Length: 303
Image 1: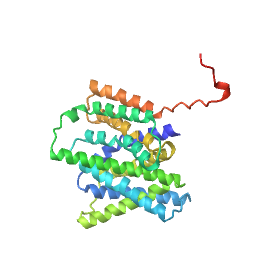
Image 2: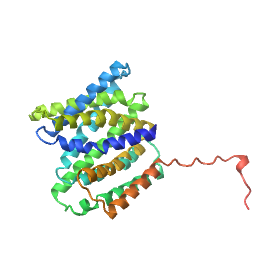
Image 3: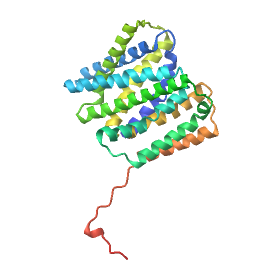
Image 4: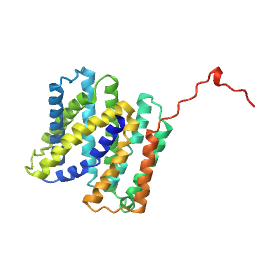
């Protein structure tokens, strides 16, 4: 089950960037995000009510969902989309992939969870591999105030994503399932961002064409309803640090799609980076060997 959820998340989030690109145009970025998560929340609530699986939450649960909506379905998307205006998208992906290490460190800091050595080593290999995959963009982009701004926004978005992961893990430990918390979190995120748009005077425009509507539906159903549910289920089942390795692997899927759709050219460093990402993937999912219990039967005299 974990492998199926993992592959599903990687495949979906590895292709949503195309839909995001198709959304750019008449409709402002924050308004598109409101449409996406508002519709996704509506679909989740309808499904949960029809199946009678909507869980009742107390005040604490709603407050955590409010914070989750702010982190996962509001601030981080604003940060990443605006960061892409200042730095290459590949560099944004590299920064975002540090979520693996941030999740491990935050889980250690706030939950006292032990960080497995194989998780840190696998995440490090994955980051090194991504550096090779995006090497031309990394070395070809000179430092400037705009670059620092873009990096700062990308890092802030990654930290918000990591915080949302830990909040979801906290909810699942309390017995709340991702479908319920996602529905409320997406609704809260859409409302908060909608209020921001009203205050800032951002018009709620709409493009009634196949390109925009099709990309919106892809982001709503596979990208949000299915993708976030699968990913946050992994967070509860595997832990935030292992689940976040999706963020290292899905840019590789995006590059393969780009090779087909936009003529991306594979290079020797890129292929080496792909190998490192795969090795890191194996290490992250490798289960540590259980320690041998010391019993009178397995004690041996020293030679």
